[in-house]
Length: 84
Figure 1 (spheres, helix red, strand yellow):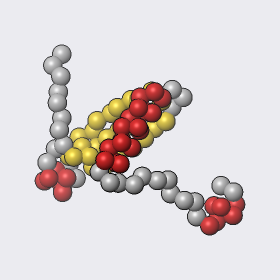
Figure 2 (spheres, one colour):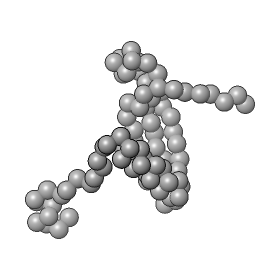
Figure 3 (tube, one colour):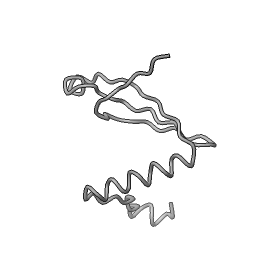
Protein backbone atom coordinates (compact mmCIF):
# COMPACT_ATOMS: atom_id res chain seq x y z
CA UNK A 1 0.00 0.00 0.00
CA UNK A 2 1.42 3.38 -0.99
CA UNK A 3 1.55 5.99 1.75
CA UNK A 4 0.04 9.40 1.20
CA UNK A 5 1.66 12.60 2.36
CA UNK A 6 -0.59 15.52 3.22
CA UNK A 7 0.77 18.99 3.89
CA UNK A 8 -1.42 21.92 4.77
CA UNK A 9 -2.63 24.30 7.42
CA UNK A 10 -4.59 23.20 10.45
CA UNK A 11 -8.07 24.68 10.17
CA UNK A 12 -9.70 23.03 13.18
CA UNK A 13 -10.05 19.90 15.25
CA UNK A 14 -12.42 17.83 17.35
CA UNK A 15 -11.42 15.62 20.25
CA UNK A 16 -13.08 12.45 21.47
CA UNK A 17 -11.77 10.96 24.71
CA UNK A 18 -11.99 7.23 25.35
CA UNK A 19 -10.94 4.96 28.19
CA UNK A 20 -7.48 4.30 26.73
CA UNK A 21 -6.66 7.58 25.02
CA UNK A 22 -8.03 10.09 22.60
CA UNK A 23 -8.99 10.38 18.95
CA UNK A 24 -8.42 13.70 17.18
CA UNK A 25 -10.14 14.60 13.94
CA UNK A 26 -8.08 17.34 12.30
CA UNK A 27 -9.33 19.51 9.46
CA UNK A 28 -6.50 20.42 7.08
CA UNK A 29 -6.63 22.95 4.24
CA UNK A 30 -4.14 22.17 1.49
CA UNK A 31 -3.93 25.75 0.17
CA UNK A 32 -4.81 29.32 1.05
CA UNK A 33 -7.73 29.14 -1.38
CA UNK A 34 -9.02 25.96 0.28
CA UNK A 35 -8.82 27.68 3.68
CA UNK A 36 -10.80 30.69 2.41
CA UNK A 37 -13.43 28.48 0.75
CA UNK A 38 -13.71 26.09 3.69
CA UNK A 39 -12.44 23.08 1.74
CA UNK A 40 -10.80 20.75 4.26
CA UNK A 41 -9.48 17.20 4.35
CA UNK A 42 -10.10 15.18 7.49
CA UNK A 43 -7.17 13.50 9.19
CA UNK A 44 -7.89 11.17 12.11
CA UNK A 45 -5.19 10.49 14.71
CA UNK A 46 -5.52 8.15 17.69
CA UNK A 47 -3.19 8.58 20.68
CA UNK A 48 -2.82 6.55 23.85
CA UNK A 49 -2.14 8.23 27.20
CA UNK A 50 1.65 8.02 26.81
CA UNK A 51 1.54 9.58 23.34
CA UNK A 52 -0.79 12.34 24.56
CA UNK A 53 1.65 13.25 27.34
CA UNK A 54 4.63 13.19 24.99
CA UNK A 55 2.85 15.31 22.39
CA UNK A 56 1.70 17.79 25.05
CA UNK A 57 5.28 18.22 26.31
CA UNK A 58 6.52 18.77 22.75
CA UNK A 59 3.82 21.38 22.11
CA UNK A 60 4.71 23.13 25.41
CA UNK A 61 8.41 23.27 24.44
CA UNK A 62 7.50 24.60 21.00
CA UNK A 63 5.26 27.30 22.47
CA UNK A 64 7.97 28.38 24.93
CA UNK A 65 10.60 28.59 22.15
CA UNK A 66 8.25 30.83 20.17
CA UNK A 67 7.54 33.05 23.20
CA UNK A 68 3.94 31.89 23.54
CA UNK A 69 2.57 31.59 27.08
CA UNK A 70 0.26 28.64 27.54
CA UNK A 71 -2.07 28.65 30.53
CA UNK A 72 -5.41 27.30 31.58
CA UNK A 73 -8.33 29.71 31.55
CA UNK A 74 -9.17 30.87 35.05
CA UNK A 75 -12.69 29.94 36.10
CA UNK A 76 -15.20 32.78 36.13
CA UNK A 77 -16.70 34.30 39.25
CA UNK A 78 -19.85 32.18 39.12
CA UNK A 79 -17.87 28.94 38.68
CA UNK A 80 -15.66 29.78 41.66
CA UNK A 81 -18.70 30.70 43.72
CA UNK A 82 -20.46 27.42 42.90
CA UNK A 83 -17.30 25.35 43.27
CA UNK A 84 -17.28 24.01 39.71
